[in-house]
Every structure is written in structure tokens, then in C-alpha cells.
Amino acid sequence: MMTCPSKVIALYGCIEWGLRDVKFLSPSSFTCNQGTFRCHAVDHEDARIFIHWREDQRDDEYDVYIIKNKKGDNCVLFKSQDLEDMSNKWVSFEWIAKNLKKKWRIDIQSTT
Image (cartoon, rainbow, N blue to C red; front, side):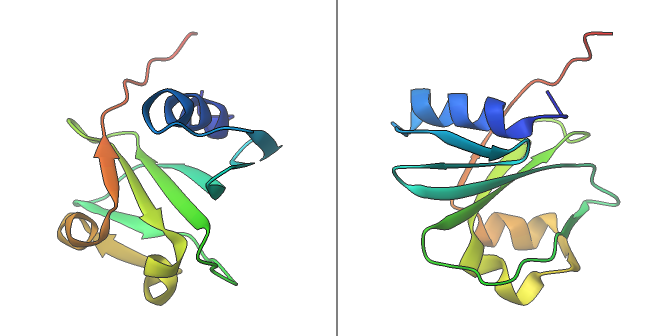
């Protein structure tokens, strides 16, 4: 799953949010009727995650962070524009809680 996080998030989005017309752009991104989604699978360190560098945030772009080593709700959705000032920086769980658009839990298990 972590080699292609976009497939898991796209399937979840279709079921829970009504996303349609999904087209995969890469193992970590897809586009659909709601815009473009970039999916990141990360570990937290001291209740912080690193926000990946993004150029050109548009209104119809979203970032999903799967926080692999977090208990409870471990997936968060952001509008990409909301991450603009935090790009290429570490952010705390407190910052995440104030700025996320959606959160949910996903179970991650190794198949090997």
C-alpha cells in the first residue's frame, strides 16, 4: 500500500466523499472530479510531520498525509494552498489539528 498510496486514498475518496472520474498520475497522485490529490506516507517524529515542498498550489489541489506510526486518526487532508507557508518545514500535531480539512483512520499492515 505504501508504494502506491494514491490507490488507497482514491478508493476511500470514491466511497466516502463521492469522488468520480479518477485517473492516476503517479503512485502518489491522482486527479478526479474534485481536483488533484497528492498522497504522502510519512512517519511522525515527536508529534511532528514534515510537509513536502510544493510549488504552485492551486485552489483545486489537495494533499493527504498518511502518518504511518500514529495511533487513532492517522490520515489528514489539507487544501494545498493551506500548506503554502509550511512547505518544506516540520509542523506539529497542534498545527495539523487547526488546519486540516478532514481526518480519518486507516489501518496499515504489511503483507510480507
